[in-house]
Image (cartoon, rainbow over all chains, first blue to last red):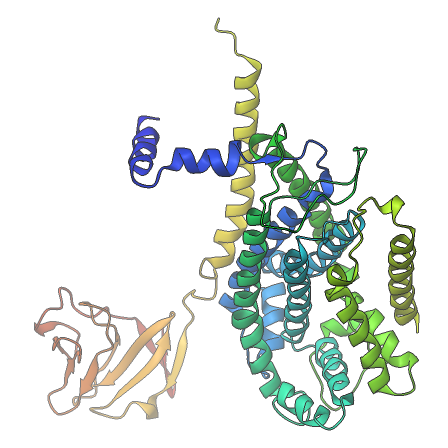
Length: 367
Length: 139
């Protein structure tokens, strides 16, 4: 311990760690009514860290070359010791990241935490959601299997529905007329360099906003659940008499992360096949499209929407409008009330929207 | 006997669980990153005799490294590791002098791998071989 104390004292006189720890941990007070849904962000940070680590490890053996990619992934799964574990953690983790992100967004929606002054928190979170979808899409191609090849063909094809520039955009995205070796190079660069950097940057902005504005109070367990923000000047939302982040809420965060990890490893060890259909195990063949090719579950609703409309452009527009509505929701919903049960119109739209999303997803799966 | 408080007991339990989790994470990681067993195991390499002319050298991959076969002017064959014992560069065969020269720091070896001059601390490693009909079986 003396060594630890010496190191602590050395840092203390230079950067004031005691004051920093007090400000950010023990004196950082959160509302007493805070609930488990507030730990979704911490779970997402843990998942992102795990994705970065497993991604770096996969890069040790993965070869981003159309002739060698599938073989290298097969070798990782079958020959490299514990390669299957690293790859399954990465593949299952990407699905889990989208799932937990959706939970995070739903909890923010239902608790009205996106309302003023937290419009930017919502917007940065929405951007993160899109970036995560992007990193999932680009990563999906990398194994260069029949599934990844044709799912990417279908996904990039949708861009072609945009009038005038659609064709050029599709070609630009693919690096050629069809999905091929240049697409792999582009998607690899996006997946391992650009998108992780962007995600890390937007996460930093998201956390800065959280820290600067203060944590919102849950609308539950209090008589007046209306938004108390006055809008005349900047005020940090503090919570006098609240619970400290350390150790109280950190314990909740850790509990949530470990519950998540239990669920995550249960899927990795006992049911990884739910994310690996048959076509994921045969190498890409540009001359043979497999029957019933479908995108990943989180793109199924988009896929089904595109199929519902006779004109692909209208299908794209509908999705664009829905996503824009979601992005600018805090600017449209100016009501003060935050309790979901006191917002019947919101509840109707939210539950209707989620039900529609799930219905389209199931329809897309069985269509 | 010293009685332990509940806090100490929980701290020990937590430390134990943490150590077990660390081992469970570290072991697969080390196995994943460690060089693959078996792949680097010594495999015999057959080189056709015709590929090693008198006074000439044949460089090839052996045991995960680089080796060289030479046929001296008298007809004697020598198999050596081509890795310089100084800093691991690959030596070059100088046909005229029948010597090996390391291009990195000028280490000179005889055709049998003995150090002539320069910084190499040891001779080149000799590799066993047998003549098998029209080929040389190294290893």
